[in-house]
Amino acid sequence: MKSAPDLPQDVSQKLQKVLAQAGLGSRRDMERWIQEVRVTVNGEVAGIGTRVGPEDLIKVGRRIVRWPAPQQLPRVLLYHKPEGEIVSRDDPEGRDTVFAKLPRPRGAKWLAVGRLDYNTCGLLIFTTSGEVANRMMHPSFEVEREYAVRLLGQLSAEQIAKLKSGITLADGVARCESIADGGGEGANHWYRLVLREGRNRVVRRMFEALGLTISRLMRVRFGIVGLPPRLKRGRFIELTEAETRRLLEWLQLAGGGAPTEAAVRGSTETRNRPRRWSRAK
Image 1 (tube, rainbow, N blue to C red):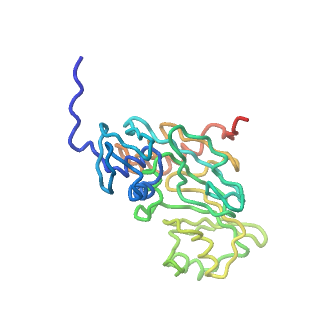
Image 2: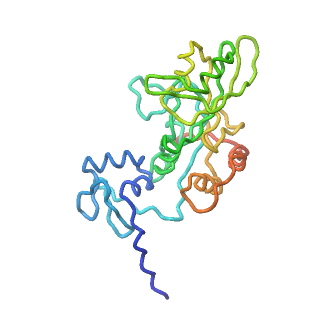
Image 3: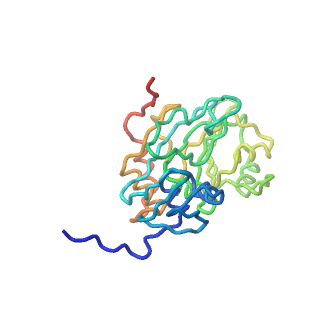
């Protein structure tokens, strides 16, 4: 039997990246843990920028963190959030949380890719990979978010122009990449908006700045992943291995060329029947 080859010099990775890939949280969370002196490497307190390899003993408190296996893919869930749920594990007001509907991943935790406010419904993506979550959410990647917006009344040409050119909010300028008329009946009218950011309540605040009232707001796409038409509210589906690999390729976290948006959206929108997870009693 041949002996195992020596590991290449560049096999080491930054500690916060390894912790995030192990599903413990986002890279920013892991940096905070390191700063709080919660992480050790080979018995020594770790610092920001510490590099580790598969042979190193990494601990968070007393918990040993295993080096993420290269062939192990992260898990990715698509969840159809209804209005009336919060994207938080704990709520002082005791409101329903989206995390109560999800299965428990072994040795990891679900990270929400972006948030939707209490009164907003639609697509939520969850993953066990902090790296995936970071790449989809970080402003520098400018991943598209598409929303279906129902208004009381219609947008004027001037209002559409303002939404596209940019509206000044308290935390900076926000603008829509595109606006498409979705039709409607009576006083209600639908529009499809595409933005490249996910600031808190940014869509609602843009319309409030124009003096408009949103009667319903729904996220229908995040990056190349669309909300599957058959996915009912309060239910989730998990991406297959092939779909996850396509998502990673698009995010440039794995080898291979980036797939077209239509290819991945099509694969995630024609899945098996959605299922509801219920905890065994």
